[in-house]
Length: 436
Image (cartoon, rainbow, N blue to C red):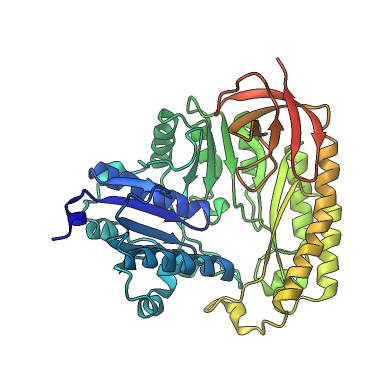
């Protein structure tokens, strides 16, 4: 018998892709810990003997990263550094059969909704009483709260419903309990995530219940910020904005992916909304919540996209001056309805279009940041790095948005809120000094 087999198992979880995957990894960690199994996230010490790779299958680059990560872990296994390699997540859900043939050394494959089966493989029991309990991998002052699973939309470019299934909302009382547990761990900022926030509640309450959920979460003592990610624009429930106005701890921040602004593209993408309707919605949102930060995501290079479509999108950005914008190059995904279209734009041209569009947004972002010089903001201290503190305003989410750089001789506590006066502004970041 090998000496290694006498050691207690230690599981390392590697998470790729979005924050929804991160929450899944945290739930898995909580279950393993409750079964007295040592578990770590992204372990750099290499003192573990089992690896779980939680994969992403969203677009080509994400799939490539997931596959390379699996190969890296299998190489460690071949060298005797690991006993077991397990794979879960979206890529595994979607391509399990093909991947298993290509990588037979993987010990087991699991889909996105097969946590009990994975735990059984790891010789752990699924503990239903732990519903909502997680071992956080984020800094303790913020956490993601996944309010639903799956998606019922039929956007032509998107493979998420193939990997995550139909929309399933979590009950309000379960989410409140989970949020209360997070607060006990020291969480001050909760970011609500789902494939589509605005659909929340339709399956279990027969109504769009996100406003009611916000009312229930906002009164939990200790929650200082609640942030909304991934709202769908079609049939947007304006009552969300009323809840935002009712509660000062709901950030004036809305992440609403629009994907494009040309009606030709919106129709081809099956977005169920027109440019004119989007413009009207944006105006309404800004009128109801003055000063709100709007983040959106766009796609460049969708099949059939013309130069005129790109120009229309750039004009739309200049017209509406979003605070934050992200952009993806179109990825041709099997079994989506867009896969039937000819992917007629080269990767190089997609990248050029994405860069062209982001250059427009970069200028807008710079101008908006310049307006902040001299203003005072409440910021949350995220970390200290290279002798400076990095913080965020309520208008900025983790990793994807602006940071406020603070140079301070006074020690600041990570996870604390301070008032900062902005002294300098760049394209995407700010600098400031603590006041008071």
